[in-house]
Structure formats: structure tokens, C-alpha cells
Length: 195
Ligand SMILES: [Zn+2]
Image (cartoon, rainbow, N blue to C red; front, side, top):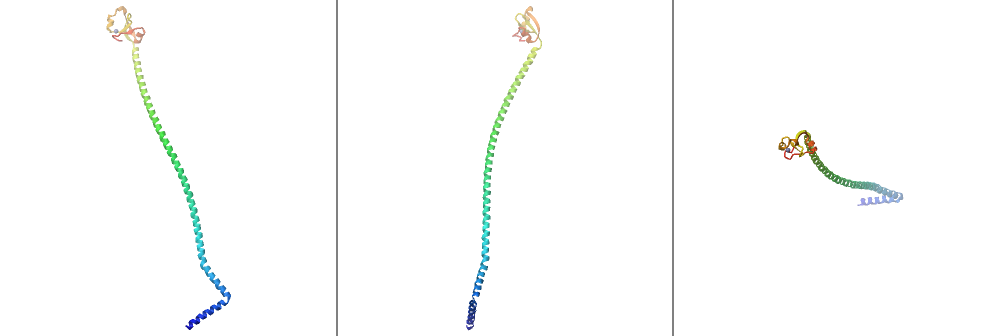
């Protein structure tokens, strides 16, 4: 116990001697402050750095956010533009469909007209055919033929008509020529032999 007391007293004495000098007290305080500053300053610098880093990250994120916002706006405007284009295309499509329908109607009308025209042409050609047959008939009428004319009754007959045998000789005249030329002479065809 005496040894312990002695060492305690020695320590206190040494401290008292140390603090007798005011320079030593100042040195101790400075050392203490230095210890605090060395211990805390790296931490504070780290936290400041972290804060700065976080700030820059926030700034970066906010700028990215703005960029994304502008991109979104751009894509929205593009979307609107595309929707307008789509509307325009749909309108054009419906217009084209209407035009197509109209053109089909016109086509149908044209086909109908063409059919009518072809029927008309057919009728025309048929008429042409009949007229050509008429021409053929008139051609055949132009062919010379021998008739017996009755100068008294102004009727003309086929050579073998029964009326010819009954006819008086002075009224009888043999004529060779076209049927028209006989008619032009004022003669009418006999109703019995119908020349
Ligand atoms: Zn006759």
C-alpha cells in the first residue's frame, strides 16, 4: 500500500511540476486540439466529399431527368405528329377507297355502255346484214328476166302464168329486163304469178 501511495504521489508531483510551466499547458492543449483535428478532419473531409459527390450525383440525376423530360416531350410531340400522320393516312385511305368505289362504278357504267354499244353495233350490223340482203335482192332484181306484159291492163306476168294464155295477142308483149325497169314503165306485178 505504501508503494502504491508513493507512485500516486510521484505521478501527482510530476503532473504538478509539468503544469507549473504554463508553456507545457499550452503545448498539452495544442496537442489535444491537434489530436481532435486530426481525428475529425479526415472524417469531415470525407463527409464533405460525400456531400459534394451526392450533390453532383443529384445534379447529374436532375439533368438526366430534364433530358428524359425533354425526350419524353419530344416523343410525345412525335407521337402527336405520328397520330396526325396516321389520321391523314386514314383520310387518304378512305378517300382512295371512295375513289376506287367511284371508279368501279364508272367502270361498271362504262362496261354497261360498252355492252349497249356492242348490242347497238350488233343490231346495226344485223341491219347492215338485212340491208345487204336487200341489196342482194335488189341486185337479183337488177338481173334481167323475161316477162310478159299486158299492154292493155298494164300488168306484167311470168312467162308461164295462166293469165298469159288467156291474153289477147295484140295486148301481149314479151319484155326482157330488170323487174324495176318494168315497174318504172308503169306496169304492176300480177297478183296470181307475182313476178
Ligand atoms: Zn300472171
